[in-house]
Length: 320
Image (cartoon, rainbow, N blue to C red; front, side, top):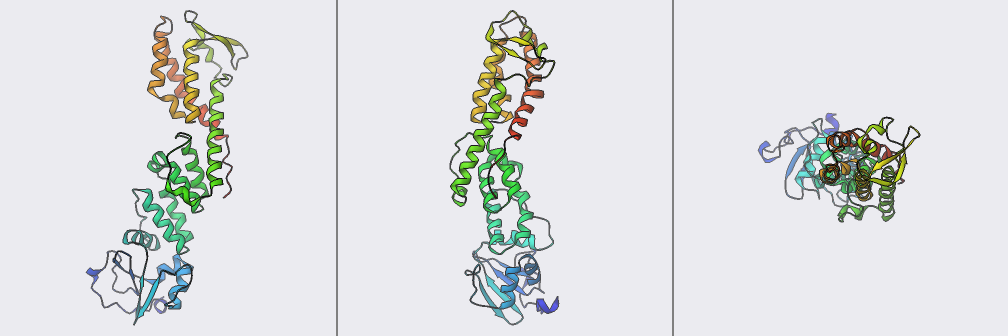
């Protein structure tokens, strides 16, 4: 190892480097685009990147792809390289190269910058360690389309599929994100097709009640004879056909409209959607005391779960 490192101590002051990359026995000094410096060991970079290993060992001052922007200068027992990347991105990549704990990311721009630097230097193994940061819950909830596009761009199939499922929680046409520039139009088209298929699967549950549990006929909207019934009757899983109160059918129709735009279980738990339904039910002396509890059980224990099951049957038809 010492032969590879060329391990003579650097004649530099530790305080001039960014801790913890300030080792006096380092054999490589990294300068970033924003003029930060890191004192590191070649061996850790070589293990992380076979491409970088060949470049560092060659000592070439005229690098070939993918290192055109990398300048290597040898000065006695150590070398210096100038990177195009900034200090924050470089430091995070170095944290993955060394046996340190993984860095914490607070935004997708930083995750993408690290993935891009790793791609540039052929650090495929390290990219697999970053992917968990890409699918943080906060990113999936707020920016699923960006997560999907980033994951697809860098060949992270599992993460792309996870993010795709979260994209259906947003409207069919969402605001433009610049990450779409880095994926084929055909991939985005297939993602929109997936959204539409999920909508069809989820909406089908609002017009066919055969998936209702066996005891569904005991819910008040099937039992009450005092309310106005819907003109149509519905068969349940017990094989019988039942009349249904109009206010419940109106709820299912509003749920269908919401699911058409955003096919996910969350939309049917919207308090405003439920409140309109309960307001109609409160006008009936029979429905009023039971409607809230029955509807809560129906939505929370059955409808939401069935929506997720329906969506799970839809395949994301995208080649990786």
